[in-house]
Image 1 (cartoon, one colour):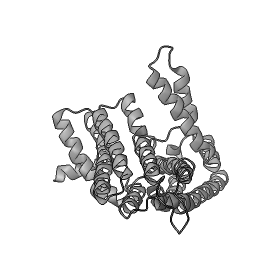
Image 2 (cartoon, rainbow, N blue to C red):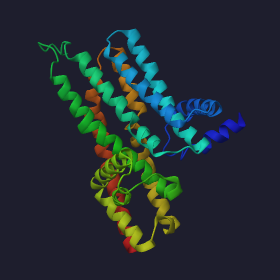
Image 3 (spheres, helix red, strand yellow):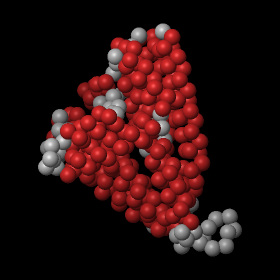
Image 4 (spheres, one colour):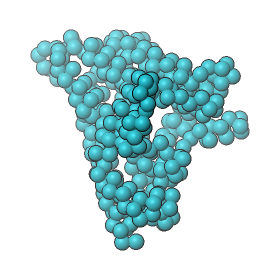
Length: 314
């Protein structure tokens, strides 16, 4: 048990960025799966592929309106999340990290949620609209899903992940963070030799654009990093007190990054599907999660502007 706990805590990047549910449930279950897969010689990419299949299967279950299919959907999506946790832990345990694995792992959650949104739209299209409105949802549920999924969910989760990686950069340094830049990823793409595998070219092209979208939405943070690099060369060489002030300002925002990632969204899907009103989940996405996103963004940008003044005046 002691060794299991040691491995578990070694696989956690920071208690600041881990949710309670992940720390006490998802990560331990994922580690059990990872240790079993290691013993059986199963590759991390296979575990990731299984998570994709489970996530899509969960979406199919949520398409149905009866309780038993929806309970099965809950179990399948939870299992997909366990596998998503396990594949990274298995990769670290075995040292089997590949580009293909990074590509699949990066898109796994997107595939789950795209499938779920699609299934819920199919489920609701011919159902009566709530509130005494005369008629079925029809195309309006697809419009709501587009707003919720593409205009709200996608930017919310990407910026939440960006803020997590920023926090980890200041907390643990470059080795403890996966914060990447558009310039760095684009340079890798441009340096790929002719005849490189298509999957490599697609990954670095799309990932560099993903990084650029994060950077465009965080102008104050970009100016802060430019000030840090100009004055100190790197975050690692900042005065300890200054670095700690950023960490203390960023830490309260981690609860919002956690809300805007997987667990809270999944619970909302579970509850609304089980009680027969999955459209409520989409409304929560558009309203509650969007308000949290705007608040988180404003707070972080304000923190960065304060830090710029301290850096320039220090």
